[in-house]
Image (cartoon, rainbow, N blue to C red; front, side, top):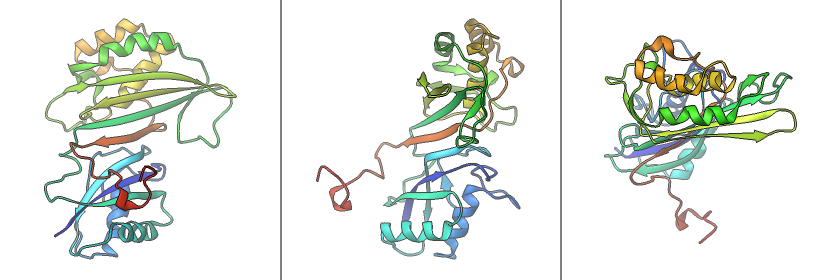
Length: 266
């Protein structure tokens, strides 16, 4: 059976997360329902990351096996047609090796968290960013983030319901920047790692936000990390503003080629 990889974008508002759940609307569930209209034999698809309710994706990756061969473009167009009016978009489709697995073949994942600081409520960005009414100290957050980079036991920064066998993970990089807006400021937190624990990014952001607001000292993050005590984590940030930005593989299945007809350098 031919295997296909999908690059997927979605607005997480209105969905109970990625993973299929009985009686709840999920991104995985909607894609599987649409696929079954094309191939009734489909049982399930496999995603690279299990985003929570309200979390968005710019480049989620999933794969599944189909009964017949499909043209990549036609399969993408057919899926997008059946996914309407859901805010889910299939950006790319590629036939891949049977050895490819969206989750287990991945070597790196990148997340972005957007936080907007302004007095007035958000309208257009509502649900797409965490809204606060006060300024944050970027310098303090940059000091605090250093303690979280590298290989550590992240018990403090993972959900008590996390199913990972080990709390030890390696954070490759954390970038925080401040962007001046016409009204207020946007703070962007970028995280890169081979994999993450459940609620790890939102736990990081919630704690760093408390540092930026002056409630916690940057050194507190080191203390909380070394304590391996979940109760010392700052408040978990809301899902608003969290985006799965990229999933990397040893060989990029979505690499643009000249035969695709839309590569500018060709």
